[in-house]
Image 1 (cartoon, rainbow, N blue to C red):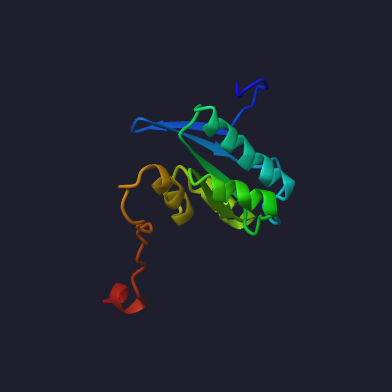
Image 2: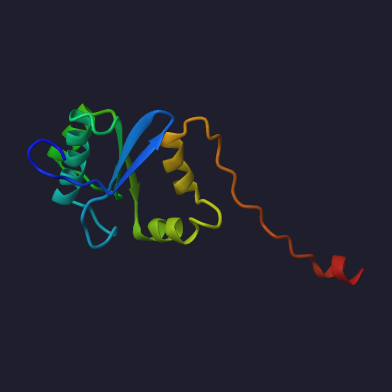
Length: 135
């Protein structure tokens, strides 16, 4: 509950004594800018921080999302971390979530867990060449 109206964020993450709110605009596709929906998602995070419901926010939006009001909210609220993706990156992120994190998934986690270290791509299986296998 924020102020007089009830608002819900996409997720709440509690780690290392801090609360992180995660928000995604209400849009059909990540193939184009979130427009006004991006502004309202950023505003929900700003309001949650102002009401001390969360300490920081993570805003996941389509690449290229912008607009004057949207940019002002982000500029005036350094506790909101913007992360931009497109449909392809989002699908990979979800498909690999339980197998091996994508670079983008790692970058989102690094916002919360600063000491996570550098991303290491998954090991590739080496296929022996014809010379090695016929040896």
